[in-house]
Image (cartoon, rainbow, N blue to C red):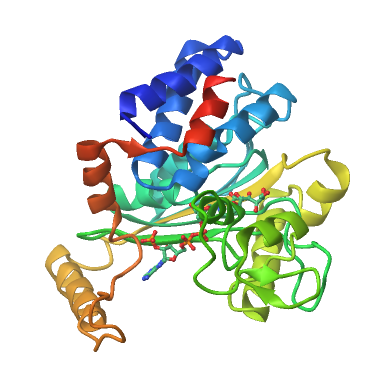
Length: 332
Ligand SMILES: NC(=O)C1=CN([C@@H]2O[C@H](COP(=O)(O)OP(=O)(O)OC[C@H]3O[C@@H](n4cnc5c(N)ncnc54)[C@H](OP(=O)(O)O)[C@@H]3O)[C@@H](O)[C@H]2O)C=CC1
Ligand SMILES: O=C(O)C(=O)C(=O)[C@H](O)[C@@H](O)CO
């Protein structure tokens, strides 16, 4: 089915206000869920809203909590989220990182006791829209086996790198070949994955999203490389925030809360003049997109370059929401 941005936001807002979330917080949170969905990231927008509400109902998310700065070292700050709403806290932390970068050229905010931030790309994009390089990542509960294992001991720990420019270029990627959200999107659409996404119960690589959602033998992106990157991202987030690691969150918490996150902003414009910046970026983009195509009908594109089109289409035609997901939200 199709819904408008306003219908989507109103549906989210109603559920939040009915649960006693103060109207201003509810409005801002509903806005972020609706914007994520409108940008085409259904996996961590509308599809993930029922799970977010489940964690709100369970008390994992504390909607009135106010994130607090614990330590300041000039360009680096350490904050405690006190388990406030994940997307709103992350937005605030990337704002803080850009403020620090405007003073110091670079800003880094390390956050502990955080909740799931949903679409990590929202915060990289936010920095890039203001002209900063935005880099951020989060750890998670253990949902992926390290390379060579059957049992989940590492996180999907998505990494986001956003480059300001026209258009913004942004990689927003889980350390698994597919996020669980994207497995769900493919399962709901009745599709097999385009490439292997994990192992079946017999240890064979599989493209079946439902199998991997169930047995959690999800494949790290780049095999051992994604496994290794997931581990070091977790270590940095844990150390700089003095917060929970994947091991600690998994072993000590009853669900995925109390995670650690890093937000970095870098000011580009004091290092290079605007004209040279644009020419250098254009050369990179042209060099890539003019490579000979493997399939003449499939254009080569850069990550993040589709968002403007997706947003425009969703605004013009309405936002597609899976019927079963919409029913769940109506029932909340
Ligand atoms: N704990 C958490 O917070 C977690 C959150 N997530 C979130 O889930 C969302 C989805 O993540 P994931 O499933 O890994 O994302 P995808 O696998 O869909 O995309 C990963 C990256 O690859 C790029 N890409 C995909 N296809 C191409 C292509 N043909 N050419 C060039 N670039 C391409 C995407 O760019 P483009 O966007 O342009 O398609 C994106 O930057 C993210 O927002 C992530 O932050 C994921 C895991 C855990
Ligand atoms: O993978 C995802 O999608 C995601 O958003 C996650 O946070 C984790 O992988 C996990 O919480 C999914 O159960």
